Length: 126
Image (cartoon, rainbow, N blue to C red; front, side, top):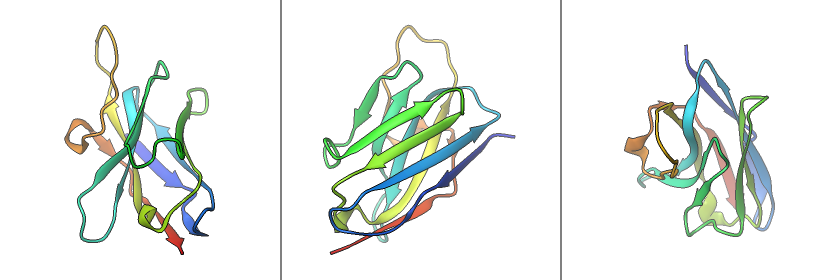
């Protein structure tokens, strides 16, 4: 059974840092991503990474967030620095199941993703 389990959320002051983790089990993925959803807003893509290390970021987090993966540990990470109150949201990791392709371009659109975790809350106070 495929499982994605996020951890590392919490409360932090503006300018602070947090690192989110997502443990992946029973899945060979094509690429994975982090998404967030604030109350009353649509879920949005934050960052995504292919197994070959190619990455993509939303403009709102470029230069502040870093996505990475440890294939041996089957864990996805999101290092978040210089956090702002507008980063407050539930953060989800998600995965696209493995496929045959010549190259990988990680996407940030929720419908592309096949599997989702339950989310971890990040709250940034001013």
